[in-house]
Amino acid sequence: MVQAFFEYDQAPVSLEQLLELGLLYFHVDLDQHAEWETHPDLCRIRKERSYVSSDVVDLKRETVPKEKLASFFEEHLHDDEEIRFVLEGSGYFDVRDAENRWIRIQVVRNDLLVLPAGIYHRFALDDKGAIKVVRLFQEEPKWTAYNRVLPETDSRSARQAYVKQVLGPHCSAPSSSSSSSSSSSSTQVPAAVAAASSARNGIAYVIGDRAKSLAHYPHMRSVNGFLYVSGCSSRRADNTHIGAEQDPVSGEWKLDIVAQTEAVIKNIEAILAEAGATLADLVDLTVFLVDMKDYKGMNEAYNKYFDQDTGPTRTTVAVHQLPHPNLLIEIKAVAVAPSQ
Image (cartoon, rainbow, N blue to C red; front, side, top):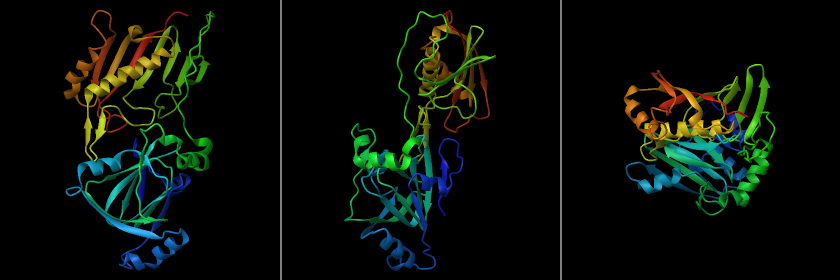
């Protein structure tokens, strides 16, 4: 049976949630009928969904060129359904939900997965390093991928139809930013702020184009002349991480403390900017490291942005873990709010 989970926090994803994204799943038991070509369940599915042709692909990490495996792991879409029935082995299909979060779907023997036309996805072998699948087609066999990095891919009719028919109003889009100026002494709420609310404990900034918080807390709060920035990591708005790259061949993650530290500082800088502050307004930082062996690398990146005379005070502590296994560092910040 197929298993799915959010890549960010490993929270399980149900078949119903996959169905809402337009995916279809079928269990075709080869242990009861070994010949896939004549399996009654598969024959029924092929007839109902007009799958008229097929081929078999056998992927093994030690025999398939690295460039080929890497191309499967590039985020892409197809103009037609992608249908895969697993005969042997296992692997991962990653798809994005309506909020642009990665969902990882593990497929094993007897799983038949249908990805709708226009959905962004990617594929990777798991640690077993091999999978044998039947590819089914509604026309002649073809595999044409349109990578997301290309600016024209979002405009393809298959993508437009998927967004309209499946994602609809739940589709996540980055908030646009615009600048405004005023001679008023009251606090200005920038356009990038998705929500700003004033309470007895100050003004909360929830910023639409930054990574969403994982619980009910703002990116930053302004009170009594100070700005308190919630702990920042290198997480992007799409829940991927700067400084964390996965090898599409081995599946192993390469984590870079320098890249992550710089990304954290830039995230803090962007959040402060919503209140008109800069890194020069910082007065105190608390750094959380998963491993003190990264202390030197963290300082290497940190010293590019601050000096001893004008930089903030800082405390660095080691913690057992952070919310995602790919995170090496998180920083919490306090800054002086600029005078209005």
